[in-house]
Image (cartoon, rainbow, N blue to C red; front, side, top):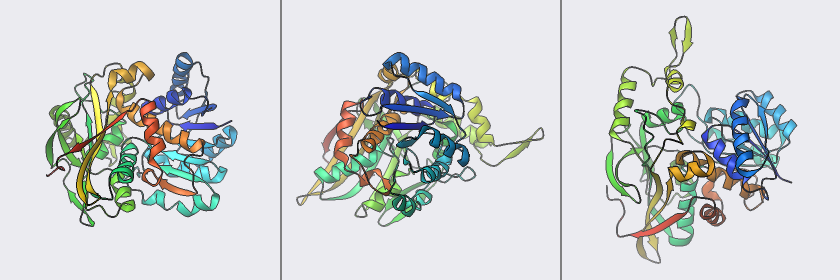
Length: 401
């Protein structure tokens, strides 16, 4: 019997638990916990109605180590799947070490008081997890996650060496709101407004946020403007594939989204610096999160598709090759299946797949691992089976801008 504890009952947590329930032969016992048990109970009810599977629910504050350790001792899971906020990664890793539980997450650690995310803090747990005989798998979402696996799979099957990598993330969906983010607004806005960084010729190149724009014709979506950004998978990919001369990440944004964002920045609502309002200290970005639409409630309204993939250039058998490997995901189809839009779906499904491979012992190890360090083949096979089919195309040239 395999037991999994999922912490986090947002859109991604909902998708992951629904997909786990569809595989009872792997996930024989599922427990869901969050700061608000009402969110867990809502998901549990949907899982029961859709799959006839009963899951346990608990309330936990994942910021508090003792509370998390107590829950782990009560549930006794084989694996903790962290789908909470990235601020809580280190607490949950500490809890796993105290109790002796394997760990998986979808996003790397980020301090609350600094808009900076990097793997350094979690990589420092390597010796502790190795000495405990435990495995921690970092970033088993889509980007990071599937994009790391795409890179590893292309290297394994189509390249002798990789020279350039461009990760392209396009959400062509429309939710009908004047302004809303497709995942946690606080994390999303911190990410978008941070300076862009890309890897080139052995060092990081930093540029102002949203200062580099290019147009690209995305399969099944069409032409969209995409912007150079920094994204966490670049850090681990250039570490584990040091041959790469250039690695970049691009994300699409519509003009209306950027106009709203500019106004919010100009009036200070994207700041993470505390201010005092009527005698109370508040953080403007957290207040903004409270008044924006809940991403978990966007599924019913969202139409259109996402397209996320990698364009890789390198050499194979002495010839220069460019491949484009991508997935297209339909918002409405996702909602019909699990009650969530495609942005949550494309993160929740890979979280389930990574957890399944760990629980089955297909992926195993002692220490802290990024996705590209694992055998990509079983993960790629499961993507095709569980709702995220992929396609690979040969291109005549790399992105030349």
